[in-house]
Image: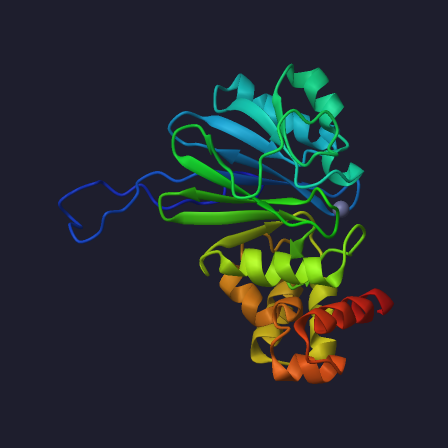
Length: 282
Ligand SMILES: [Zn+2]
C-alpha cells in the first residue's frame, strides 16, 4: 500500500519542447492516511500546496495514526500545517480535533458548526485558499449530518472533492440528520454539477459493500467494471471521478429507468428514499 505521495503530473520542462501544451508543472499533493486500526476504515487526507508547502489535514479522527505521519513531514520541512478541516461533526471524523490541537498547537479548525473545536465554518459556495495555488470551495451538503460540508479543490487543471460521509464511491451516507430530498440535492444537484473529471476522496473505504448493493439493483457495465476493480484494490479513493459516479453509483442514477423500475418509483426523491432503505436492509 503506497502511503507516500501519490504520483502527480510529471515535472516536464516548461519549454519549447511541447509548445502546444500549457502544462501546470506543479499540482497539489494529496496523501491518503488510512486509519484502519482506528475507528473503522476511515481516511484522513493531507493536502499540500506545492509552492508554499502550506498543508491542511482533513478528518484526522485517530491522532495516533495521523500524528507520526505529519510529525515526520513537519520535521523534514516538507509541510507547514495550517489547519484541520472536517467534513462533518461525527466522532470518527472530527473527534480527534482536541488532541490534534494539543499536539500541533493553535491551528485553524475549518468545518461544520458542530465539529469539535471548530473556529471557522465557511458558507455554502464560499472559497478560501491553501497556500498560493489551491482554491477550495465549501459545498454544504446537509443530510448525513446537518453540518456536512464537501470541499472541492482546484490547482490548475487538477480537481478533487473531499466528500466525507455524503458521497462514497458507489454509495452515499446514511440519512442520520436529513432526508431523501436533501441527499438528492447533495448528490444530484450540488456534487453532480462539479466538472466530470473531479476525483472523489470519500471519508471511508466502503466500495466493496457499496458495489455489491449496486449490483443487486443493476448489472450495468460500469457497475461490473467497478466490482472488478474493488476485488483487486483495497483502496479506491481518488481513483474515480464525479463522471464515474454518475455511471456506477445508483444513488446518482435516480433518473435512470432501470433504477426507477428496480425501486418501483419514478420521482427522483422517492427513488433516493427507496434505494437508501434497500441498502439499509441489506
Ligand atoms: Zn458520519
